[in-house]
Image 1 (cartoon, rainbow, N blue to C red):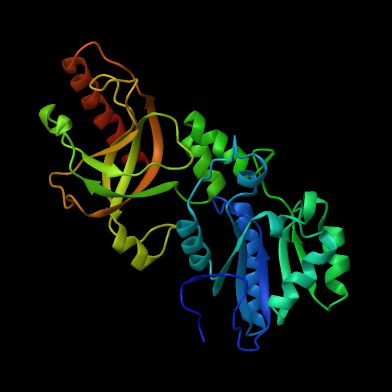
Image 2: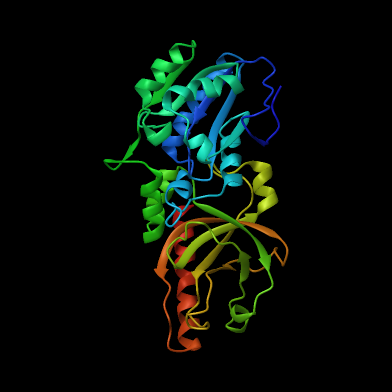
Length: 330
């Protein structure tokens, strides 16, 4: 029986007596390193006709421990859960990271899990994973406590790209700096966002470059600037699966601007906006449609231009740069 695509809490899960192979971690971004942990759990579950599960946490622990400066997340919980399922997870478990959970000692962690997940057969984590109060528990302690209950622990080695470890922190830095190609290499898929098309001020249309204004404001803001992107109907993406290994649904080439539009907006009052100009002859999207955006390449930083004519000339160059970039990527 395949469990429905649904995020569950630790309490009240019925696993129907089947062995559970559980990947555990925050998994923000679900990058290549995270994927190796989750895929190991999935493969074990398939071999033993068991259940492949992912246990993750919400919110990020930094919200509790550094509320004045929490870690900005690469993706929201819903997108992360869909990636888990695209990788083959049968069930996604989301544990509330609150003071009570944070106070559990490393020695109490395995009993806490077993009480709620009595068919737990094996645990999969990254080799540097820490757990328990004060992050005092490491993989060696996890192995010791798990073996007492005949639970196997598999620790997956870190993956490296160009000599440096793949990590969510590294990806966040890449996005903040506009190093999109590097971020996508570490993720193993294209960074993406989703938003609903809303009525705009028609500024792009007046300039000769009509845009879709998307209601999207990521927790982690990528660098303000112009990007080569592809877009698709969000429903079509959901039908084909979030791109853990690429999208197979139709996508439209486009150029996007993410920022505060300083040439036409009062910078002191502006909130970041994601605008997308399609490079085709027609636009199949309108207000109210949910749109999926694949961010493929950073073209230039956002600038303030001396006139709207100068802005129009630059947008035309941006469109050509985006076309060239997207054609080279095909």
